[in-house]
Length: 92
Length: 203
Image (cartoon, rainbow over all chains, first blue to last red):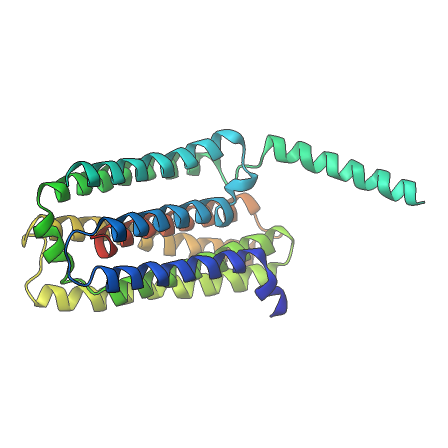
C-alpha cells in the first residue's frame, strides 16, 4: 500500500485528479452565468493541455520513447491547443 | 572493491543513458501509427467544433448549460484512475510480477467499465428531455464526439480483456502486447480530457 502511494505514477494521478477538480470548480463558479469568459476558457484549456501532456509522457511512457515519438506527441498537444485557443480568440 | 562497485555503477549508468538516447517505443509501432492517426482525426473534430462554436457563441453556451458537469468530472477521474492502474499493471508485468500486473489490469478494467454506465446516466435524462443530435449544432457535436469516444472505450475494454487473458495464459506474458493494449487505453483517456474541457468547461 505504501509503495502504491509513493509510486511516481500515483503522484502523477493525484496531480491530474487535483487539476481536474480545480478546472471543474473554475468552470462551475467562474462560468456559472454561461457567458463568454476568456479567463475561464484559457485556464481550462491550458489545464487540459497539461493533463494530456502528463498522460502521454508518464502513463503512455513516452518520456522513455525515441525522439520522433516525443516530438510527434508533443507537437500534437501544442499544435491542437494553439489552434483551439487561436480559433476561440479569433471569433470573439 | 569500492572502485569495482563504482565502475560497475558507471557502466550501468552509461548503458542506461545509451538506452535512454535510443529510447523504447512502448508496444507495437503499428499501434502508435493508429494512435497518432486517431489523435489527428479527433483533432480535426475538436478544431471544427471550435470553429463552429465561434460562429454562434450564444447557442453553444446556452446548450452547454444543459449538460451534467458533475458526471463529466466524475467520468474524467474514473478514466484517469483506470489509466493509473493500467500503467501500474504494465510496469508490474514488465518487472515480472504477474500477480500485481493482473491486479492492475483488473482494477483498470473495472474503472473503465464504470465509464459507459455513468455515460448512460448522463445521456438517458438528456435524451428524454428532448436533447438529441437534431436539437442544434452543439448537441450534434456533443453526441457524435462523445459517441465516437464511447466506441473507443468499448474497444479499449475488449483490448484490456485480451491483455488480462495474455497475462493469465502466456508464460512469460508478451510484454509488447501488454504495452500495446495499455497505449490504446491511455489514448482513450487523452481524448476524453480534451472533450471534457471543450464540451463541459470552456465558456
